[in-house]
Length: 151
Image (spheres, rainbow, N blue to C red):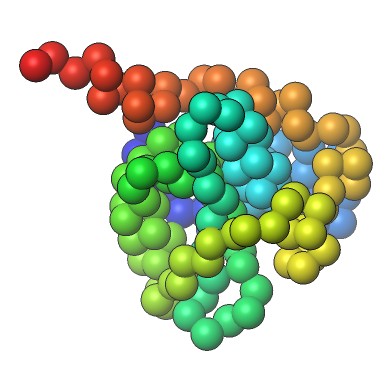
């Protein structure tokens, strides 16, 4: 899947106000806008043998991040699956029409949510973690893709 801007899937006013309506969106939309941070941590947790980091983007100069994702060795994982990180950053910058800043996330999920005004798993209509784990499992990680390339 080619990287797609998270903003394409921004929640409507109704989806922001009603967690059940937000939950009913397709997986890609749900994890692009509203639960991207849950997906990033699920990706990291699904591959404990890899040094997967969590990163986020914000408009240059803005303190508020708007999209979180997992990163590994120049690759990024978000609602679009695994893509080269520069591609993910470029499609989001193009969509937003502004330069973006990449922010490395070094805190745990609870602290991230508190600092960036994001929901913890127990604040969703249902627990999003099992849904995120299933979504992560749909995508072949880049280290598997690289290992299967012909010589």
